[in-house]
Amino acid sequence: MEVTKVLPPGEEQDLDSKELAKLIRKAIYRTLADLKKLSLPQKTCTVYRPDESSLGCYDIKSPSYREDVIWLRINKIWRSEESITLTDYIWKRGALKLTLTGQNPDKDVWAFNTYHKLVREPLLVALESTTRERLVDYGAFEEWAVDEEKIEEAIRDAVNLYGKHRRFVTAFCPLSSLSLLPGTCLEIAPDIKLKRWTPRNLSVFLSRHSHEFLWDDFKAPYCIEAIAEVSFSFKARKKVQQNSVTSMVQDLLDLLKWVLFVSLNQERPVAEGTCLIKCELDVRMGRFRRDENIGPSDCSLDKQTVNRCTELLQDFRSAAKQVPDLNKSLWHFGRSCVATLPRDIQLESAI
Amino acid sequence: MPGRGDSRYRFCLHGAAILSTKPHNGEDVFNTLQEIYDKRSGAAHGSNASADEKIAIDSRRLLAKAIHTIVDLIQDKKLNFSQVNGKIAKAVERYVRFKVTSCSQ
Image 1 (cartoon, each protein chain N blue to C red):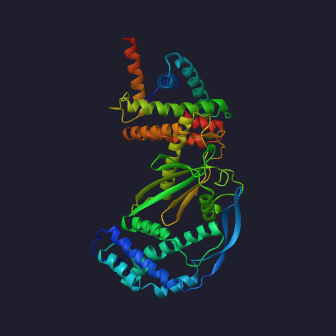
Image 2 (spheres, chains in turn purple, orange; image 1 turned 90 degrees about the horizontal axis):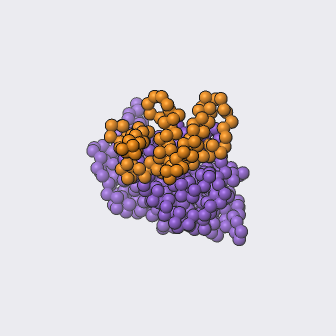
Image 3 (cartoon, helix red, strand yellow; image 1 turned 90 degrees about the vertical axis):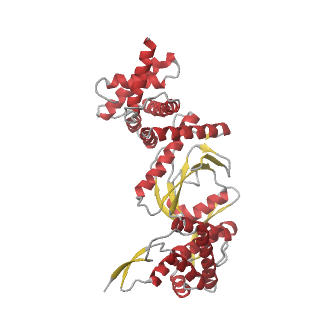
């Protein structure tokens, strides 16, 4: 007979982020050491690499860290001393509760699930990310090689998500018509940045996400210089729907487009390309494409314009805090920017 | 437009009051807004399906400018939101009324 239980029992206590990070780190390195003996299956993947003039696209053999053989090995080695210490720490604090259904859902089943979230997934993300960067940089990889920095990044993500219960969302949206120098990062606000990636950064991004863009997409990151990076966070256990996340990203993009439109004094607003939404641990949250316009002719952003954008944005936010109705007007402006027909532009602009 | 009646006139008057940067270009803005209102009304009621591109672009530009001006007016505390339920259109109506009455005094 099946039973349903919520585990661990007892009242949930806060987890100490530093302690959690330390325990996850130990469990990850132990798992890595145990897995290293395993020979990895390989698969062919598409890798972008910068060459003299542009980017080259290559099919390269790459280790596949998500094959059955690795799952089977993990099933054998997961109960290490380090992992047990980690799961015991969380169990004692009644944290990371799970509703489990089965013949006998017990601590072991809960611990296995928790191990996957806090140890296995961050480790695999760090391994894949390291491999991708090495393939971009050298065209070759080293089995089980993982950069310490990637592990730390993955641990930070896991602690934010499972310890602090915060979900951090970042969206990447190419914007047409803006000229920026390679490596530029313009911070319009802490949560809104305009960047031009270096050829290496662009190669790493495309090696991971090129399938998100159509081959003839003239507003894909390989055709467009400026990428808007917008970010925000929300409470992880609050039920937030996919379309709410998309709307939040779109609102930030509308705000960015408004400040650029006013500051640059152009006839047309900058046009968006396909926007990709991601959250921590390299999770893809979604994608949208809502703008078929081309945008104005090339315009460059000097320091003065960027400062003007920053001021406008701060003023708008401060005013919208006092009068939330202002957000509706901005929403209509955003709609008018992505409208294609003059009729639709007009209907959105004059209400 | 809040309330009933004369919406075309009030759209143009309120728009011109907040969009005209210099006193002498108020009439030009008023005329442009009249044209925008008519085209918009035509588009909404299906009598003019192929809207004019220039007017559409002007509409968007003026919307962006109107947002900017309203932001400034809010920052300068020139818009009074008490008893208007946070509605910008109502606050702008009051602002125009105040401007007119203070001019005539």
